[in-house]
Image 1 (cartoon, helix red, strand yellow):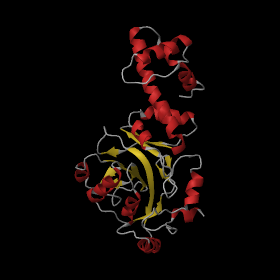
Image 2 (cartoon, rainbow, N blue to C red):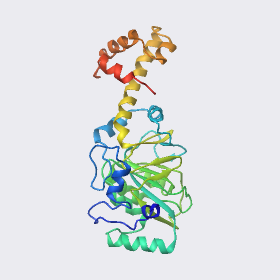
Image 3 (tube, rainbow, N blue to C red):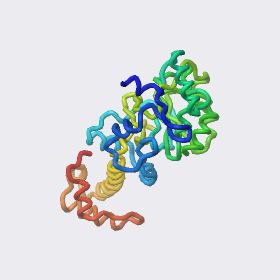
Image 4 (cartoon, rainbow, N blue to C red):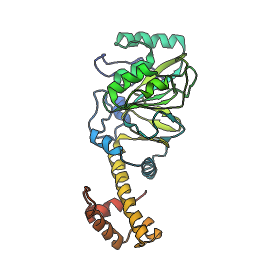
Length: 305
């Protein structure tokens, strides 16, 4: 059964819909903790507003929160990127590639052609993309002849998503990709070769990116440190806490600089006096909606970050 999930021999939807290698029911089963809206193929649809909020949080805080939730395999580092200072944020559309085998690749291409897919299989995932998506591909770390995109496909990806890509593989024509305003790419390396001896074996399936597991619909967040994949059902909780940590740290820095509190007091469980000082401080911050004491107490309850 696992083999069937890996091979795109069950492209069950028409070209107007989203094709995938596992049935919609299976994708819903694998992401059953998600209770919100879904795409027609069953992929969790993290709200656009949450994606925008995620742009402001710290990836270290996100990692820490996920660790506290018991999710230890959601981060991967060691990337080369076009714009280190421009994070990629969006919902994962996943693709799995493997070394080519002629008989299997022929079957894949014939079935794909029947369903309206055109060109080489590395372009097929692009047909599944929509605004706010991030194309995430397991290219088994191949560099030479493992270039999943160049500037042509890069333009097509950005036109559909407005974001970028995360590839455990390489890409070519970095100068051309750099000219795509707003586009970013996290890859293992850059290489001038063309893609060769590689075939698509999974589309919108669970994949492995280095030491991380990625499911379709995960919230992708990048920084210069690396990439974190937030399970869709935890996205709201994680981003909310990460946003709070930023404000909490701002308060802590000010208290430490003023000498009002010591590092030991700020870094440990807050006393009533510190919590009240935080609420008072928040009311003085322009443009920010302050928390109530009840909201603060709930946020700090059973803290694991």
